[in-house]
Length: 276
Image 1 (spheres, rainbow, N blue to C red):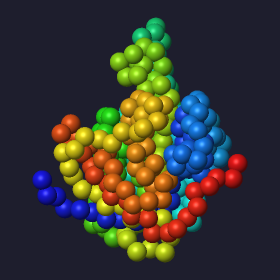
Image 2 (cartoon, one colour; image 1 turned 120 degrees about the vertical axis):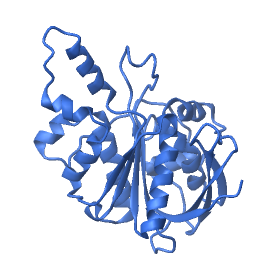
Image 3 (cartoon, helix red, strand yellow; image 1 turned 120 degrees about the horizontal axis):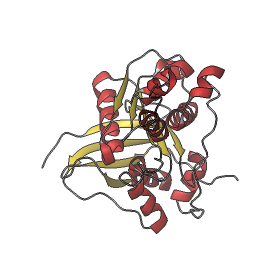
């Protein structure tokens, strides 16, 4: 099935999840230079937010801000000048749980903070507060294929508008009883700064097209389990290909019968050794 191919450059990466503290350590793990040790995700405080908003920020907000800022700092850009795409399979599960508990109690009044943090675009709003960004922000949800959905949206916007854009894809865990029907066990997020091809700061070029092939799997059992367990971690085959620093092709989840093929073409000779 021939489809149009869309090509963009990658200028920065942010990564945070179980066993991944940032992209620098993550690339060493994914390149096979150090072993993967599953550990609970530690979310840093959102220091770019004013104190009041920082206190109110939930897991999804902290995760989105952390990975977005890491990617943009790595690219050497000003976040206030960049349009963004936020993609998540759900929202803040703990905030949703707290609202459900309140609605099931005698006093059913929901605090305004709980309410405004319950909407799917809450991280985009906090991002605007933290960075001063006033450019367009798209907020998407594609269930388990939310990363692929966000990647296609971001690549398309870069190609159509001929400008940089930032993908911020993230998921956070749910407490019981929500975890039983939606078993996401921890937080995972990845951010990509994408740009028109040919920029001086490009790390790799990626070309995206639609295919009917099955998604790529990872050889490491723990990493493959992570890929399948958290929707945003469906990005791991792409991240591993980038970490290896070689030309590669991976297939990512998108629709039930339609997926994204991503071809990676390195532009810079880089050492992926991490100084610990």
